[in-house]
Image 1: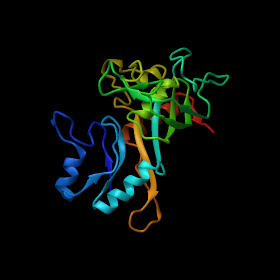
Image 2: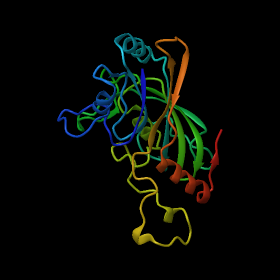
Image 3: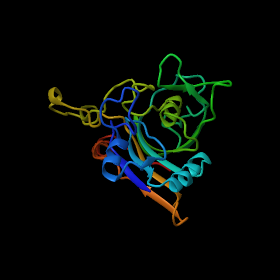
Image 4: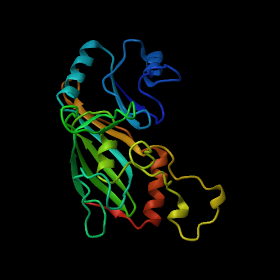
Length: 250
């Protein structure tokens, strides 16, 4: 098998039009045409993508994803919105300070968004597929939070849609609810100078696939592969910790 730390902006496989680079194309140039991806990750996200180098390994690993025994962990920087929003948002609870609860889960069925090809939405009835994600707030910074996300099912854009339904869309996720207000140092630090040339502390989709836990196809032993937070995350967190008065939760 092969685990790859995918950068943001690179699709796992080529799109319908086949333009531009894709992760599997690059992997196969280096490791051979027999390498196959076991699962996918949003092009805009970064983090661990698992691949198989043999057919038996592919079957064994794919079976674990299908049986939902793989432990998937994502980390997201989210924008904590105010009250209101979707009526079917069971996790839109807040504590006395208005922050997200330390732990919560979202159990909402998802289906394709007929009005926006390629995107998903909460879908009731037969068209919706069961989708469950567990969340834990790692650090809270008032209007922002660092959240650990554990999807128990594997629907397209599941983590992003469920966080949006909880009133805490992934930062810079213009498809699913973040209003697009950038995370700026001037918004955190009083008396900040240099606004004319200021850039967002993080400009990418703030979602990172940080770890996968599964059974190794060869040794049959438990394995976890992990990816450290990208540099942009670390920069944003450094300034949030310094100026937003946050701290660990739970």
